[in-house]
Length: 206
Image (cartoon, rainbow, N blue to C red; front, side):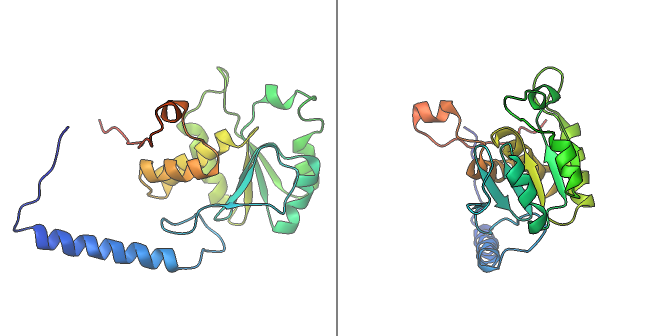
């Protein structure tokens, strides 16, 4: 394993810089969470939303973004009262056409409630994961500066996309962004559970 040593002459400067980073992180952690905008590193973990029923799996609020599984009609109808202006759906057309799982027209209902409906289908050979989806999501957040809902079937895909957004557009490290996603719904990989270890996600530089 490659290691890096610090010259004795540079050690005081290193300690001073490290102390500055610790103090800055402490200040960020003591600051109140912003009312809007993406979360900042050091703020409280995402909030589990317990007073908004009708979601499959889970629902969290991180900054101004609600991240959830499939919403029922009652859940969507409750969103305008929370100033939500857009619903972003990551489920595929095949999933949404299964009336045993979604027995209403989500797009039509969202439109009737005065919110924008954005489809970014992800999953399967017809809708492979890729940077294009992340770009559309980022553009949507730029357009809608208030609260939005990002959902898939159970919250997993939505959590992955949100973590990727933090890494690419908000300056988070890949490790920190993924850890944020784990707190919402990415979940711990079975590989880590089998070994009872914590995994660190690190971006490989070319």
